[in-house]
Amino acid sequence: MEIIKVNQLNKSFGDNHVLKDISFEVKKGDVMAIIGSSGSGKSTLLRCLIDLEKADSGDIIMEGKPLLKDGVYPSPPEIRAIIMKMGMVFQHFNLFPHLTVRQNLELAPKVVKKEEAVAMNQRCEAYLNKVGLLERIDAMPSTLSGGEKQRVAIARALMMNPDILLFDEPTSALDPELTGEVLSVMQSLANEHMTMVVVTHEMSFAREVANKVVFMDSGTILEEGSPEDIFIHPKEKRTQEFLSSVL
Ligand code: ADP
Ligand code: MG
Image (cartoon, rainbow, N blue to C red; front, top):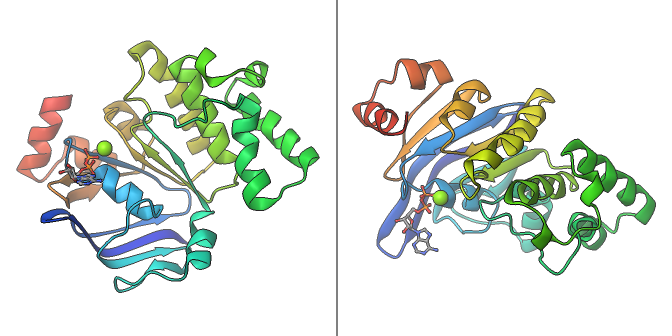
Protein backbone atom coordinates (compact mmCIF):
# COMPACT_ATOMS: atom_id res chain seq x y z
CA MET A 1 0.00 0.00 0.00
CA GLU A 2 1.14 3.54 -0.76
CA ILE A 3 1.61 5.80 2.19
CA ILE A 4 2.45 8.81 0.03
CA LYS A 5 2.01 9.34 -3.65
CA VAL A 6 3.29 12.56 -5.19
CA ASN A 7 2.42 13.46 -8.73
CA GLN A 8 3.76 16.34 -10.85
CA LEU A 9 4.45 18.54 -7.83
CA ASN A 10 5.63 22.08 -8.52
CA LYS A 11 6.70 24.83 -6.17
CA SER A 12 8.25 28.24 -6.82
CA PHE A 13 9.50 30.95 -4.52
CA GLY A 14 8.88 34.04 -6.65
CA ASP A 15 10.56 33.25 -9.97
CA ASN A 16 12.76 30.54 -8.42
CA HIS A 17 11.19 27.29 -9.64
CA VAL A 18 12.33 25.00 -6.80
CA LEU A 19 10.36 21.78 -7.39
CA LYS A 20 9.77 20.77 -11.00
CA ASP A 21 7.24 18.06 -11.76
CA ILE A 22 8.26 15.85 -8.86
CA SER A 23 6.61 12.41 -8.84
CA PHE A 24 7.32 9.44 -6.56
CA GLU A 25 5.68 6.92 -4.26
CA VAL A 26 6.48 5.73 -0.79
CA LYS A 27 5.05 2.35 0.14
CA LYS A 28 4.43 1.05 3.64
CA GLY A 29 7.73 0.02 5.18
CA ASP A 30 9.86 1.86 2.63
CA VAL A 31 12.93 3.75 3.75
CA MET A 32 13.49 6.32 1.06
CA ALA A 33 16.71 8.34 1.13
CA ILE A 34 16.78 11.66 -0.71
CA ILE A 35 20.26 12.80 -1.67
CA GLY A 36 21.50 15.73 -3.71
CA SER A 37 23.45 18.98 -3.56
CA SER A 38 22.54 21.87 -1.35
CA GLY A 39 19.81 23.97 -2.93
CA SER A 40 18.37 21.14 -5.03
CA GLY A 41 14.98 21.37 -3.28
CA LYS A 42 15.15 18.49 -0.77
CA SER A 43 13.96 20.44 2.26
CA THR A 44 11.25 22.22 0.29
CA LEU A 45 9.96 18.85 -0.87
CA LEU A 46 9.72 17.50 2.70
CA ARG A 47 8.16 20.76 3.88
CA CYS A 48 5.50 20.50 1.17
CA LEU A 49 4.74 16.91 2.19
CA ILE A 50 3.94 17.99 5.74
CA ASP A 51 2.27 21.27 4.74
CA LEU A 52 4.95 23.60 6.10
CA GLU A 53 5.06 25.01 2.55
CA LYS A 54 2.23 25.22 0.05
CA ALA A 55 2.94 23.76 -3.38
CA ASP A 56 1.67 25.44 -6.54
CA SER A 57 0.43 22.48 -8.54
CA GLY A 58 0.27 18.71 -8.57
CA ASP A 59 -0.99 16.05 -6.17
CA ILE A 60 0.10 14.83 -2.75
CA ILE A 61 -1.95 11.81 -1.73
CA MET A 62 -1.43 10.48 1.78
CA GLU A 63 -2.90 7.03 2.44
CA GLY A 64 -5.45 7.63 -0.29
CA LYS A 65 -6.49 11.07 1.00
CA PRO A 66 -5.53 14.19 -0.94
CA LEU A 67 -3.45 16.77 0.88
CA LEU A 68 -3.23 18.41 -2.53
CA LYS A 69 -5.20 17.47 -5.62
CA ASP A 70 -4.68 19.23 -8.96
CA GLY A 71 -3.06 22.11 -7.10
CA VAL A 72 -6.00 22.56 -4.69
CA TYR A 73 -5.82 22.06 -0.92
CA PRO A 74 -8.74 20.70 1.13
CA SER A 75 -10.16 22.50 4.20
CA PRO A 76 -7.86 23.19 7.17
CA PRO A 77 -9.46 20.43 9.33
CA GLU A 78 -8.94 17.92 6.52
CA ILE A 79 -5.33 19.05 6.15
CA ARG A 80 -4.75 18.71 9.91
CA ALA A 81 -6.21 15.20 9.94
CA ILE A 82 -3.82 14.17 7.17
CA ILE A 83 -0.63 15.69 8.54
CA MET A 84 -1.36 14.28 12.00
CA LYS A 85 -0.32 10.93 10.57
CA MET A 86 3.15 12.27 9.70
CA GLY A 87 6.05 13.05 11.99
CA MET A 88 9.02 15.24 11.14
CA VAL A 89 12.52 15.44 12.55
CA PHE A 90 14.52 18.56 11.71
CA GLN A 91 18.22 19.26 11.38
CA HIS A 92 18.14 21.63 14.36
CA PHE A 93 15.94 19.42 16.59
CA ASN A 94 13.32 22.15 17.23
CA LEU A 95 12.73 21.08 20.82
CA PHE A 96 10.81 23.52 23.02
CA PRO A 97 13.65 24.97 25.13
CA HIS A 98 11.47 25.93 28.11
CA LEU A 99 9.93 22.44 28.47
CA THR A 100 11.48 19.30 29.96
CA VAL A 101 12.06 16.23 27.83
CA ARG A 102 8.83 14.69 29.13
CA GLN A 103 6.87 17.88 28.46
CA ASN A 104 8.31 18.02 24.93
CA LEU A 105 7.05 14.51 24.26
CA GLU A 106 3.65 14.95 25.87
CA LEU A 107 2.67 18.36 24.54
CA ALA A 108 1.24 17.38 21.17
CA PRO A 109 -0.59 14.22 22.33
CA LYS A 110 -2.14 16.23 25.16
CA VAL A 111 -3.14 19.28 23.12
CA VAL A 112 -3.95 17.70 19.77
CA LYS A 113 -5.25 14.29 20.75
CA LYS A 114 -6.42 14.99 24.32
CA GLU A 115 -4.71 11.76 25.28
CA GLU A 116 -5.16 10.54 28.85
CA ALA A 117 -2.25 11.19 31.19
CA VAL A 118 -1.58 7.61 32.26
CA ALA A 119 -1.39 6.15 28.77
CA MET A 120 0.66 9.11 27.60
CA ASN A 121 3.14 8.84 30.49
CA GLN A 122 3.64 5.17 29.71
CA ARG A 123 4.24 5.77 26.05
CA CYS A 124 6.57 8.66 26.82
CA GLU A 125 8.68 6.42 29.02
CA ALA A 126 8.61 3.58 26.50
CA TYR A 127 9.80 5.82 23.63
CA LEU A 128 12.50 7.45 25.72
CA ASN A 129 13.66 4.00 26.70
CA LYS A 130 13.69 3.02 23.05
CA VAL A 131 16.02 5.92 22.18
CA GLY A 132 18.12 5.21 25.28
CA LEU A 133 17.21 8.37 27.20
CA LEU A 134 14.77 7.34 29.89
CA GLU A 135 17.09 8.67 32.57
CA ARG A 136 16.92 12.15 31.00
CA ILE A 137 13.12 12.38 31.21
CA ASP A 138 13.14 15.41 33.51
CA ALA A 139 16.11 17.15 31.88
CA MET A 140 15.88 20.49 30.10
CA PRO A 141 16.93 20.37 26.42
CA SER A 142 19.82 22.79 27.01
CA THR A 143 21.53 20.16 29.18
CA LEU A 144 21.49 17.52 26.43
CA SER A 145 24.12 16.85 23.77
CA GLY A 146 23.12 17.31 20.13
CA GLY A 147 22.78 13.57 19.66
CA GLU A 148 20.55 13.34 22.73
CA LYS A 149 18.42 16.25 21.53
CA GLN A 150 17.90 14.55 18.21
CA ARG A 151 16.97 11.26 19.87
CA VAL A 152 14.42 13.15 21.99
CA ALA A 153 13.08 14.74 18.81
CA ILE A 154 12.63 11.28 17.29
CA ALA A 155 10.86 10.01 20.42
CA ARG A 156 8.65 13.10 20.33
CA ALA A 157 7.69 12.41 16.71
CA LEU A 158 6.84 8.80 17.63
CA MET A 159 4.43 9.97 20.35
CA MET A 160 1.87 10.88 17.67
CA ASN A 161 1.92 7.31 16.30
CA PRO A 162 2.83 8.49 12.81
CA ASP A 163 2.40 6.28 9.77
CA ILE A 164 5.45 7.94 8.23
CA LEU A 165 8.44 9.82 9.59
CA LEU A 166 10.19 12.53 7.58
CA PHE A 167 13.78 13.43 8.46
CA ASP A 168 15.55 16.52 7.13
CA GLU A 169 19.30 15.99 7.53
CA PRO A 170 18.90 14.71 11.08
CA THR A 171 22.64 14.35 11.67
CA SER A 172 24.01 17.37 9.78
CA ALA A 173 24.14 19.62 12.85
CA LEU A 174 25.92 16.99 14.96
CA ASP A 175 29.57 16.45 15.73
CA PRO A 176 30.71 13.34 13.86
CA GLU A 177 31.03 11.29 17.05
CA LEU A 178 27.33 11.89 17.81
CA THR A 179 25.87 10.92 14.44
CA GLY A 180 26.16 7.18 15.13
CA GLU A 181 23.75 7.18 18.07
CA VAL A 182 21.08 8.94 15.97
CA LEU A 183 21.62 6.74 12.93
CA SER A 184 21.35 3.63 15.07
CA VAL A 185 17.95 4.76 16.39
CA MET A 186 16.87 5.32 12.79
CA GLN A 187 18.24 1.92 11.82
CA SER A 188 16.19 0.29 14.58
CA LEU A 189 13.04 2.08 13.38
CA ALA A 190 13.74 0.75 9.88
CA ASN A 191 14.16 -2.75 11.29
CA GLU A 192 10.68 -2.37 12.82
CA HIS A 193 9.35 -1.42 9.35
CA MET A 194 8.65 2.22 10.12
CA THR A 195 8.02 4.05 6.84
CA MET A 196 10.58 6.82 6.50
CA VAL A 197 11.71 9.51 4.08
CA VAL A 198 15.19 10.70 4.98
CA VAL A 199 17.03 13.62 3.43
CA THR A 200 20.62 12.81 4.23
CA HIS A 201 24.27 13.38 3.49
CA GLU A 202 25.10 10.09 5.20
CA MET A 203 25.75 7.96 2.14
CA SER A 204 26.38 4.88 4.28
CA PHE A 205 22.86 5.22 5.72
CA ALA A 206 21.36 5.67 2.24
CA ARG A 207 23.29 2.67 1.04
CA GLU A 208 22.72 0.28 3.90
CA VAL A 209 19.36 1.22 5.44
CA ALA A 210 17.30 2.69 2.60
CA ASN A 211 15.56 0.46 0.08
CA LYS A 212 14.97 3.37 -2.32
CA VAL A 213 17.30 6.23 -3.14
CA VAL A 214 16.26 9.39 -4.91
CA PHE A 215 18.83 11.79 -6.38
CA MET A 216 17.56 15.35 -6.65
CA ASP A 217 19.24 17.88 -8.91
CA SER A 218 18.01 21.45 -9.53
CA GLY A 219 14.46 20.72 -8.40
CA THR A 220 13.98 17.49 -10.31
CA ILE A 221 14.27 13.83 -9.42
CA LEU A 222 17.05 13.06 -11.82
CA GLU A 223 17.41 9.42 -10.91
CA GLU A 224 15.84 6.96 -8.51
CA GLY A 225 16.32 3.30 -7.74
CA SER A 226 17.68 0.79 -5.28
CA PRO A 227 20.87 1.66 -3.40
CA GLU A 228 22.67 -0.62 -5.82
CA ASP A 229 21.21 1.19 -8.85
CA ILE A 230 22.25 4.60 -7.54
CA PHE A 231 25.55 3.86 -5.82
CA ILE A 232 26.97 1.15 -8.04
CA HIS A 233 25.32 1.72 -11.41
CA PRO A 234 24.30 5.40 -11.57
CA LYS A 235 23.04 6.21 -15.05
CA GLU A 236 23.20 9.99 -15.04
CA LYS A 237 26.41 11.93 -15.29
CA ARG A 238 25.20 14.39 -12.60
CA THR A 239 24.57 11.50 -10.19
CA GLN A 240 28.07 10.17 -10.84
CA GLU A 241 29.57 13.62 -10.26
CA PHE A 242 27.61 14.13 -7.06
CA LEU A 243 28.61 10.73 -5.69
CA SER A 244 32.26 11.21 -6.51
CA SER A 245 32.15 14.56 -4.65
CA VAL A 246 30.70 13.03 -1.46
CA LEU A 247 32.05 9.49 -1.30
P1 ADP B 1 18.03 21.77 -0.13
O1 ADP B 1 17.28 21.34 1.08
O2 ADP B 1 18.16 20.70 -1.18
O3 ADP B 1 19.35 22.37 0.20
P2 ADP B 1 16.02 23.83 -0.30
O4 ADP B 1 14.72 23.15 -0.51
O5 ADP B 1 16.32 24.34 1.04
O6 ADP B 1 17.18 22.92 -0.86
O7 ADP B 1 16.11 25.09 -1.28
C1 ADP B 1 15.83 25.00 -2.66
C2 ADP B 1 15.79 26.41 -3.22
O8 ADP B 1 14.67 27.09 -2.67
C3 ADP B 1 17.00 27.25 -2.90
O9 ADP B 1 17.27 28.03 -4.04
C4 ADP B 1 16.54 28.11 -1.75
O10 ADP B 1 17.22 29.33 -1.74
C5 ADP B 1 15.07 28.30 -2.06
N1 ADP B 1 14.25 28.48 -0.86
C6 ADP B 1 14.06 27.57 0.11
N2 ADP B 1 13.22 28.03 1.05
C7 ADP B 1 12.87 29.29 0.67
C8 ADP B 1 12.02 30.30 1.22
N3 ADP B 1 11.34 30.10 2.35
N4 ADP B 1 11.91 31.47 0.54
C9 ADP B 1 12.57 31.67 -0.62
N5 ADP B 1 13.39 30.76 -1.20
C10 ADP B 1 13.54 29.58 -0.56
MG1 MG C 1 17.85 21.29 3.09
